[in-house]
Image (cartoon, rainbow, N blue to C red; front, side, top):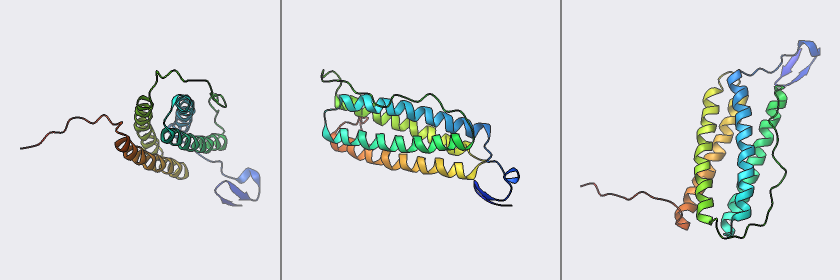
Length: 170
């Protein structure tokens, strides 16, 4: 029997089943739940956002989250792990009250991204058994890092950053 990854030629009962540790299984599930929640939040933020550049950022982030969610769903299916409850397809409502400002939305996105960086790096750290799964988490972490870098640049450009006072060292 010849087996390359999940593809094999020969008797099916001689194929090696994919392995994943308990910690890795939890990391997949936890990352998917976080992305489902984040997708809901981004959709709500999009409804409240007025700034066209902020809306583009949110749309870009929603695509990234949905792409990463699909990858994690595939991994759960591969290891025959249960999927968490899926979020609604879309969240749309009329939100033109002016109460929620773009700066507030942006800060929530920014702090959420900081949390995601921590979550993704923990998943990489816990993925020691399964090399291909660790590569997936590394790719997701790198995508998040590059998006975070773009957010930092936009934060400075828009003046939405809450920068601590600078001090001169004498």
